[in-house]
Image (cartoon, rainbow, N blue to C red; front, side):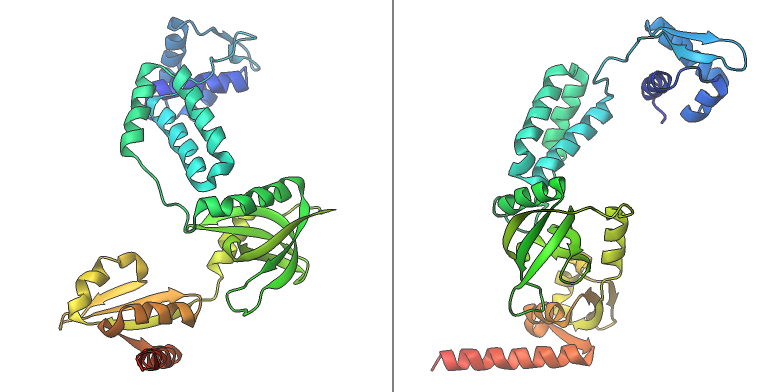
Length: 321
């Protein structure tokens, strides 16, 4: 907090929240010396902010009773942060909060001074976040809206869910606890009554869903952030090692985010390791690079790629007859 203007606003908020604070206590919260704190008090007085002090063991600095800081006093950076946050809400939630986001930005534009409005105008041109979702947000809107209602009203849902490893969708009854957007995918976190345990469901794999009248009580000790951190950290992962030919080296380097590790060899080829939750995903990656890549390990993946490649050849040979 190096900006004096930011410290002054924070000081007003501290005094507004808790009157009668000692100089040393306020200085510590602001990260300044007591001498600097007294200078800030003088600056507030010059600005017409009514601050007074009382002596004694229970005394300290306070705002005059009834004084409230005017609303929407933002620094330029704070105004940009509010704008960016509101824009991200619209981008992630789509139509569900699009109207509310546009209304909030219109209110900001109407009340902020020129300096903050100019900073927001710069951010609108220069700080862009798009493509936050893997799937079409308009397709997800109906199920998101229904699930948001279920989470808000603590009502059970019944759905047919197509798991990644199940050939047929399964009927599930779930107590929906929370919605989360992670890695571009939407997830429902809730207690599955079929499994009698907490589960995470990807929204694009929900085939049908019904909002039930039965209510549920969320576990008091449930923390969605702690659950998500543990859930994605503990997911089973398969590590594959692959070697790319020198001709594909530039493509491998340009997609570093795909690889857990990358090692350039003397002959110009590149060895990478990649993590994925199952062999199917890894086999799809390997086949997408055709003859540019060779799977080194695990052996199960080498076998799967070989069988898939042979099946593809036979399919196209038969199609040409």
